[in-house]
Length: 192
Image (cartoon, rainbow, N blue to C red; front, side):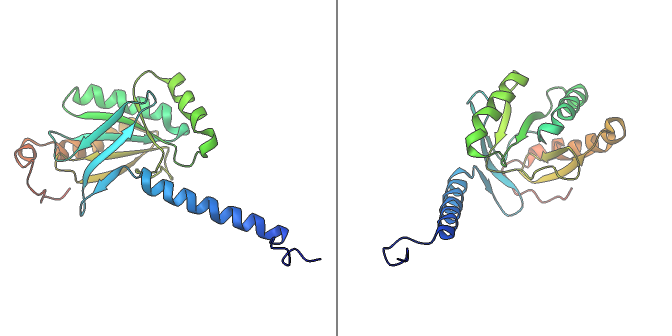
């Protein structure tokens, strides 16, 4: 007796059905979890939670530049060193936020990833489950510099902190100029 006669699909088809169902579920979940809003070429709003379940809302335009250090597990130590270097260079002139690039962690293991980050640091680390930020690929760390008007630039960072620091400081200063602050609320016309 064939399985199709009694209404059951063949064995191999069950796996295909399960994969299609899971992919549809993941697509719907990703659409609902998308927590960023982009204008033409700039960020308008970003909403992410940290490892302590505190939600952080970033709305643009805002005063000064905002820097996001996006790292996977391999780039976490480098992100700490860059954070220290930027705080030493800028103090409180800019906002600096660490972002854990963990969108590829399966749903079943997300609580373990969150617990690992909680054990690693007390400082808030934004959890990027829905891959709002691009994942660092060629280097262990990605820095997103967001100007006060919301336009942004991504910079890949490596291990050579001393050599790259001058270049990064110059780019951040361009994003947080006083003339830029006067334009908050208007379209950001100048280029990087």
